[in-house]
Length: 453
Image (cartoon, rainbow, N blue to C red; front, side, top):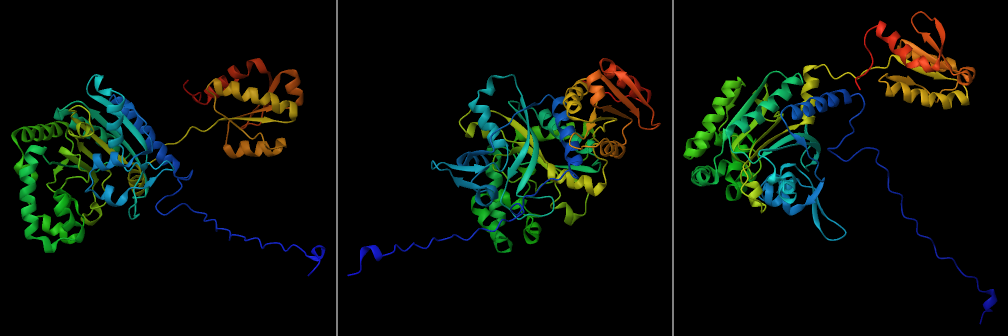
């Protein structure tokens, strides 16, 4: 028997898991919005938020993640969004949740949960932010998409529908997208839609073999969605389908007639589109979409946004009977259209003053000076990380500022500042206490520059 002392312990081989390759790009259908594109987005944010304020809408922010059944009940189990496109998963606690594919269902939930029905009607809310849909990425359509929209809850009058359309149309025009048409339709209320649905099913049953696979399935669950199909063979079939506006009840007919009269009064160009139904189950009566003028093929996929009435949504979630109407704009689509048209974008104010410093003590003092200038509405550029005065002045030249303020060790101790006129090269030493007034005076000589406070 071998001596125990002579036995050596053998080390177990350490298993090394292969290192997962780092993919230096976002998932398919998602992307970075780089600084070069931000002027377009800044323009969109500026105009949409101003329009919301002008029309009396207040901002609401809702969670990016909601319980999955909120969307299943609100949007409809037979819709493409719920069946195919939602990013759904189970949490560690076993809860079924989804990334929001749209905002309206979440806003209806918040309206009920927080008792917003007690506020004066209509309750006007606006939102902006990302949504997520797992669908095939294409031009202007991403899996992470950004929306701006408004919801007016608690009012049934068609004038609210028209004001919502007017607001969307104005935003698009103010972004420089001038040639826009509003496609409108009425899909009726549950009372008159029942008989229309039966007519539609009867018609499409006779043409079933000519429909795409998805529309054959829709025929059982949601026949109105066939009218929204973009497949060529389905487009041909639906051309002769019964039209919803021919089968409206008296109330829906009056509602739609008044809506069209209001649009004519506003001189907003519109087209009746009998195949327009929108893709969500909660819509009732008015539905509409905004289209830039384009060729027939391009127009199929170029809607900039749309919306409609959803008078039964709040009640279907357990709230009171609440008529409501809303719209959303696809910000990605708007930016793409702006680029196509060569629209002038929002230009940020550029600084006309540069603050240069030299030495540790001067650097400390320059922080306070920078703060004082900014608080006074004077936009200032700086390059605190650069060491030499020469390198800082090069930055000032590149920015084409009018004045450079130079703070060295001596000036920091004396409480003075050197003001250099960049055009003439002249320099002058002034008392630091008079700096703000002196800078404002010199800048006003070349035109107003001080920002509004």
